[in-house]
Image (spheres, rainbow, N blue to C red):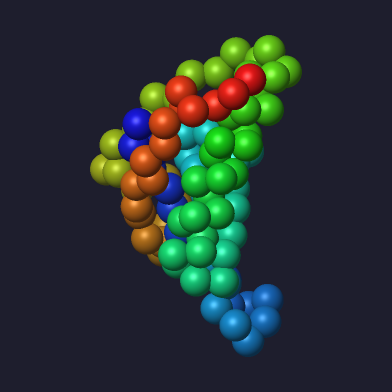
Length: 94
């Protein structure tokens, strides 16, 4: 399953460029990294961890990837880079 993510820079924290990542279709799932590549690897692990926790807790959820066109209209998502991360939720061992 391909899940859209939003990568935004946050250079206000320190002199290094840091990238924050939001997963709009999975509320509460965020991550970060010092590079874009690192941020994308970290968010993939965050997605597996977040969904795995929901499953272990017995919480109902549905991941229905939204189209970029729809997500990009949200004011909170302005000024970032959209990307897709591919995850296979069948890999979760819960």
